[in-house]
Amino acid sequence: MMLDPWQDDSPHDECGVFAIYAPEMDVARLTFFALFALQHRGQESAGIAVTDGARLIVHKDMGLVSQVFEESILQSLPGDLAIGHVRYSTTGSSEMRNAQPFARTRNGSFIALAHNGNLVNTDELRSQLLRNGHVFESTSDTEVIAALLAEHPSRDIREALRAIIPQLRGAFSAVLLTKEEVIGFRDPYGVRPLVLGKVGDRFCLSSESSGLDIIGAQAVREIEPGEICWIDKDGYHIEQVVTRRREALCVFEFIYFARPDSVMKGQTLYTARSRMGEELAAESPVDADLVIPVPDTGNSAAIGYAARSGITYGEALIKNRYIGRTFIDPDDRVRKLGIRMKFNPLSSAIRGKRLVVVDDSIVRGNTTRALVRVLFEAGAKEVHLRISSPPIVYPCFYGIDMADQDEFIAFGKSVDEISRELGATSIAYLSLEGLMRATKVGEGKDCFCAACFTGEYPCEVPEQLRCSKFRYEENACGALRR
Image (cartoon, rainbow, N blue to C red; front, side):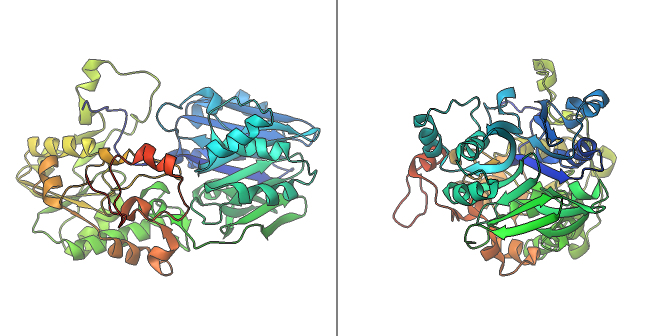
């Protein structure tokens, strides 16, 4: 398989969302900065919707936040309240028509919606709306939610949400704009994060606390699973609208998705990831000369591994931070450069060394395989891979772009087989128990969705959807075999 230097092999989250009510402030500019801080959650499109209570203005386009919103665009977005969105799409749906927020007319007024996550009953809901005569402009499940809200007869948007949220199955953390308020809501499992913040005397909502920090906002509290939070002239208000299920925050928020400076469950993700590295060192020690991270995703865990193991920490891979995603397809000459488009090894630090290489996860293994080869070519004596999460062997249905099951390098293979396939001296993964200890959240696995490791999905997945990603027969015990 040809390694695409523009695409890494990590899981990808779908989106980041932000909302603010602040009539005295430049809400479009504040939303721009918040989206800039949430850019890691999606790099394919960005959008902002604003209103002054009389009209709704939406600007969205393909590209990074800084590409979509020039100064002249921000000045053309006056308003008192706003919502914003950054998007990462799954393969085949990176199109302008799927960019968010989605705007709809509703009872003679308007709404705009932005959403992070993925519904597992989209087809059912879409069919229902099609029978009612709705015409869809996109392939996004966000438009389905917007259409349900737009068509609900109640003039009270909160009453509409109380009726519609129980119909939605899957993962959703969403922000909604009306002419006089912004509203955030989470699914009853809390798979995707959402946090309430205070900026001055006004309030805002963000996928992560890093979206608050950049605008000088203080975190107030996380929106809990099954809650809606509306923000208006009187401040913020919270209501539990669906019965809370067992909490199932996506564990990859702790492992990889959220920024290391973001705070979740009362702790910075940097601290939690450092503990993952410490647990990994305790579980899988090795004689080596140098611990190095795969930047930037392995940095925190590598620091923890070095601290627990006593092995020197160092940087031996220099990342080209200007690669990212591009709308210019690299030609074959560029593709042949492969991994070196993203990482260049420091041969002077590597030559003759036994390396512990720490990363957060491996999906298909293409990037890791190429990276191991580059390290050996640079003179490494040994390359011991240490991964600060368990092996990924089950697909995600809740908004994470990973792969189908038969593409996972860990599926159906022993650790030794994986090591040989990657060309490494050895490989070890953090156990699920070690991962949960490192999170220091409640009862561990009872507080997270870890279905990509265990196959235990908190929200039932329709059989047709399961079959689209599972490539192997499932036996009576629920274990998958070739």
